[in-house]
Structure formats: C-alpha cells, structure tokens
Amino acid sequence: MSQTSARSTVFLDEMGVGVQWKFRNPAPGEEAAVQQEELEAPAEVVVEAAPAFVPAPAPAPAPVIAAAPVAAAVAAPAPLPAPVAAPAVAPEQPFADEPVAEMDDDSTAWFDEAPVPARAAPVSDEAIAAMDWTALKTAVSTCTRCSLCDARRNAVNGRGAADATWIAIAAAPSRLDEKENQAITGEAGQLLDNMLKAIALKPETDVYVTNLVKCRPSTDDGADRAPTGEELLACRPFLDRELALTGATMAMTFGQYAAKGLMMGPATRGKVMRYGAAELPVVATYHPDDLLRRPEDKAKAWSDLCLSKAARD
Image (cartoon, rainbow, N blue to C red; front, top):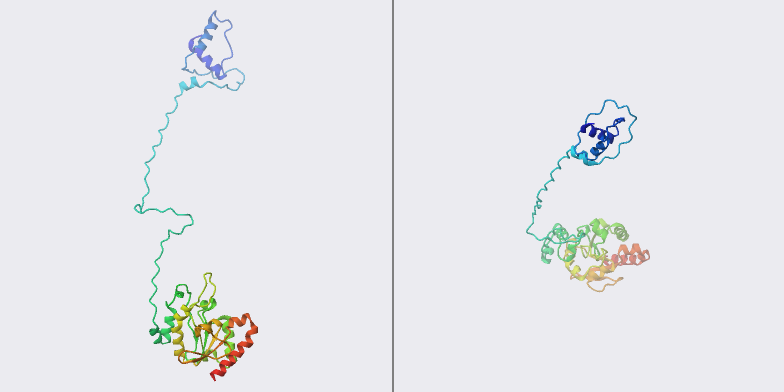
C-alpha cells in the first residue's frame, strides 16, 4: 500500500467510514510498516475523495477528534482590531467661574430670592384729615402706617351710608371679614342689622359700620387677635376722618376690645361715655359674634341698645 493510501485509510477510519476490508495475506513486514506510518503521520492531512458508495453498516456516532490536525488545515480568522475610545470631552460649564455650593436634597436655598419691594411711605395724619371718601378708601386699601400691611390679605373699609347719623365700631376685621372685604359680615353682620332694626334704625341709610383697625391682626398660627396699642394709634386718623365725613352724632362699640380701643383705656357697659373733643356719646355692648356664642347675653345687649337710643334722642 502506498503512503498516500495508508494516510487516507487512517483518516477515513477516524471518521468512521473507512473501508471495511484488509489484505488477506499482507506481505511480511508490511502490516508493521503500516502501523508505524500511522503513528508517524505528519500533521498536514490531504483528504482524498471517499467512494461514492460504501458497503458498510450505519456508522457509529463520531468520536471527539483532537483539534490539532484540523486546525492546521483551516486557518482561524484574524481577530478584529480593538475599538479606539474617543477622547472624553468635558461638558461645557456656563458658570465655570462661579463656586458651586453643596446643598442638601431638601434645600431650597438655590432659588433666587426676589427682592422685597420697599414699603411705600405712610400717608400723614394731616393728609388723611383732608381726604374725601374716595381718597380715604384708597388710602385705607394701600395703607403702610403699621406692620399689619405686610401680612394682610385685604384692608377692610367701612360700609354703610356716607352721611350716617350713627356709627357702629368693632375692634378689627375677622378672618371672614378679611375674606369678604367687608366690616362685620356673615352671621354676625346679619345679627348686627337685626339689633339696629330693633331700635328703629335702617342699617342701609342710618348707620356706618367700621373697625378701629382696618387690617386683620393675627397670631403666628393665623388666629384672630386683639389689636395692639401701636396698631390702634396708626389707624386712628382713618376713624376720625370717617366720623367727620359721616357727621355721626352717636356711636356704639361692639366687643370689649372695641370699647377699650376707642377710649384708649377703661370702658364700661351700661353708661354713656364721651369720645374726642366733640364729646361724641358712646355706648358699649357685646359683639354679635359673642352673642352668637352666648345667646344668654342678648338681654344685656338689648339694654345697651335702649340706652344708646335714649342718649341719641
């Protein structure tokens, strides 16, 4: 057997499709030579075409073949070149010259604080004393005479007849008054009207309703509070101008803070007090809100109303 035939036989045997026959009587020494050639076969394998038909049973599963002989025949593909990373470009820093402060996640300090507008100069007492109704209402709405202007929702002007003969005075607007922008409103306002009607007064034409302080005083938690002496003095020129413009000849205060605030000192129910240089007669009684909370005091309020009616007549 030639050397090429011997190598082909070995390869086909390894593939499991080799020719299933041998020489019946091999020449002496030839079988040993063939075995020696099989052991010393070079790595390069040249495969001859297999017979078109092999009269043999179905081959067994192909055994695992060492990779060395085949690898020599099939060249591995060249590895792809490693991608070249693009140089990192630093993001543009529009404020590179400004220091960046570290902040907590919940911090709102990075907001730009809008400058607080300067408070307008307060109107003078002399200017208020010369105002007509239109100028007076405008001055009240834009007043900066005390710190209440910094937190108010509305400055509440008085309501009622411009030439009223009676003036009804409370201490300060309530939360509801501020919301409605009207002095003594809601259920308290309805009760006040009924009280005035009980002594034959027409609320729309006979009475002007106002407050000593035009802006609502409040505590830190937003509750209503009594006005301070400073707040009372700041608003007093407005009240005096309202008295002058109406020409009222009788006053009633509603609530203890209104009575004490108007008189700037002790005040007593059940007697006629006098206010100002004109000695305007004043009668103090309960605030309608107090009467809504304590209906048992309505009898005392009725007595005060009768006293004021007698003082006016």
